[in-house]
Image 1 (cartoon, rainbow, N blue to C red):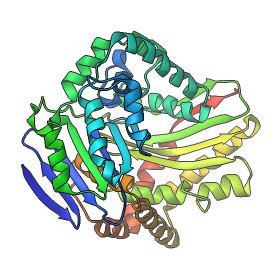
Image 2: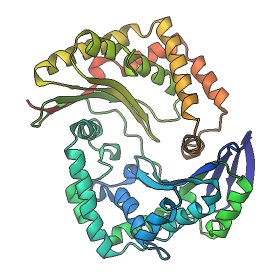
Image 3: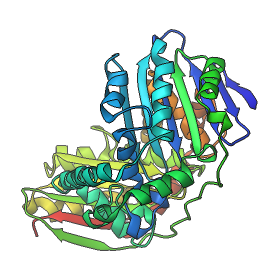
Length: 416
């Protein structure tokens, strides 16, 4: 195995079978966070199997060869720890937060659910209903649902436009064989990154993983890269829905996680709608009183990204709110940021980066993310220097390309 020191207290080991292991030591803590990331998620699905990654994420907790569902739930919770999982566009994640002394137990439980789920047909039948209830919960939450509708409108023929949870029809049709097939194909070392942060030792972590059999596994096939979705679909879609508000998302595709323009876009988005001092909040809410919630958002994935604006407003003010937001898009695309705005955004973003890394969970996510996206490791000071290096021309180019009002795909959800 090849182990390298990436930074003070940060180590990476690449096992011959493809498993990547990263740790960051935070010896002042009495806790640890650990997790497995699997390169199998909604971005790898087909339309007919939409939601299979998420259903598998649920099902691994329904029982393993050694533990019942109740025993899995009690294993860490009874010791004050927490066990969690989620499915995204690019990865499915299984993680635990525990006392440092319970890290061996946490790794054992995580290994158990990731490698040895029993996936019984009778459990799948029940869990399908649970996921369909989760889908119903999103459908009853319009400020969540509108983002699913926007992704589908932006990427109508690409998996980034699929719903992570799936639909009632696709989930209802999934069988245990579908889950076993996905698990057998992808829950293998070449697809997996393990990361831990907190009061952890890299050597001890490697020994625990070795005892759990991770280094003895066959690597499995190479993991599937999600294709570039290409240009988004420029459209405006209105979905009728009873309610007291109209929920609107305006957004466009941007670029993948590794694009060097990432920090320029983050800075522009921060000035545009990143807090109470942002242009949108001050104009739409404070000056005109057109909305309670209005903000900019951005996400970067393996193959592409998205940036845009959400606003929730009453039906009589919806057209006016969108007119004002489009005008702000136009001003930003045309004039970019002032020197004062750019300097303030840099300080704001750097502060957010540093404050977010105060705990082991965020440190774990940081080191795992760099491996998952094939990004070279950079110390925090180097990341902050990249933010500082964004110049006025960089911000202006991003603003002109991605914040032009005519580029936005628009989805309305609410009373017509």
